[in-house]
Length: 413
Image (cartoon, rainbow, N blue to C red):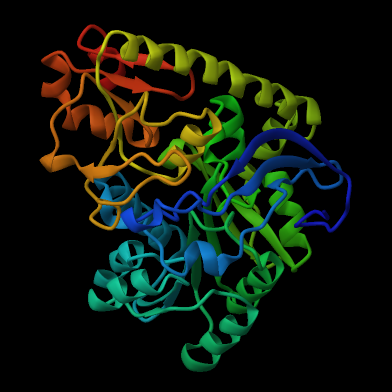
């Protein structure tokens, strides 16, 4: 394999999560009679450009042609997009009539936030079902996989963009260089690219190994993105860390030399160097901690099972499939997963084959295993009465803990 960024072959594997199914290819009841496809899930480090990446690419059409993750499901994410919109409009001086293009725009939740300000918007998303949802709510969306060719079509029909955004998608890109070239062309007349991507630094700090799945081909630092953007005449002009999704980088990117570079960029670069993000030893230690989490979490779940207590998964996110399949957790320890997303209810988590049921129509277990731990505080508020009446949350990341009424306030505050 060659590096997805620099094309060199100096790659070293530091974590092998085994063969796993595509996390979001949920199974229907009629699928259970045959084995779903499994693919290697291995993570490596490029000694040349420091980019962390997985070794195997599941075709984007398999993963994203129909997609079940919907941006507007949680209040936390809706609030995040509203505040991001206001911050970017003010920081960049966007005006009515300016064009905003969102790559991987999902159901249009973020783009809808720009419309009250009079900005023109266009979403581009390869998931046909989500593009249809966005168009139905009045957010123009092209059901396409963004790349350089699509960028040229946008310029021909709508002009260049003042802002291009990509939230939670820049690590998905099979056509990484074509996409980046398209962004460079779209913002060439003074526009800015805003990328929000899960922070590799926070993954390392909190052992968020379940952020690794086949949709996430690359895991970014400022240093590794520097290398990618430089190849396309771009540079990072601002760097920030946002709390969303367990810690995400927000980088503003522009044509090289077109805008001043904020001191935040050098600060983040220096901190990454200090923490060893450019050294393989850092990643080897991360890999070792994953298996410590496995042992601790399985001990908790087996204790509940031995006591005859029921444990349900709370939510069925993509990261949850990674955790369950990496640790070989099936229905003997977690009997079902509760969901509010109707696109998931009635299906099964692949690999683990745990049934997904409607949270609103399901009894309460003795404990929930919290798979979307990145929304923990929202869920603690939602389930306060449940916990105060004897229920519990089992939280696997960064270190397995049980939250019950004795320590609820400590974690909910």
